[in-house]
Length: 127
Image 1: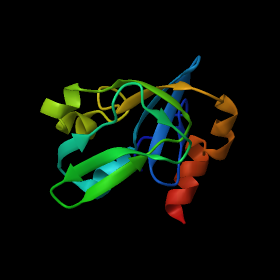
Image 2: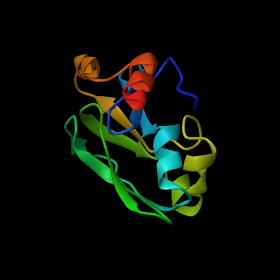
Image 3: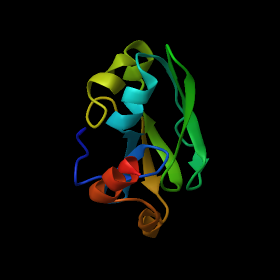
Image 4: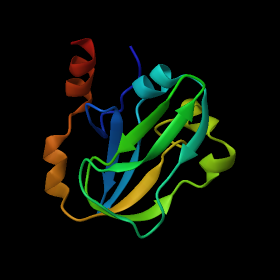
């Protein structure tokens, strides 16, 4: 079974969110990475972009497919991981660390109630 850290929240679209104060770090799960295969390109939102929960944030291109990723929580994009422009493989190598995608200043943390715990996410994957 893949690694799903307990301090994160997950979506059924295979994104994760780590909330620290009012800052949410968003990325894709190791399950999504495995489904995509070798990641070759990522398109990220611009800093200052306002997003609503469930809205598309960008795309991830692999040798197999192009996939959109969505925000698990609404707010304002305060940082995009521009390191991924030159090193998209970081998403595969370290999805929960250096491979994060976007940081958002959260509007309403109550929206995280619509996400899954690590156990709930693993149960979702088994279904």
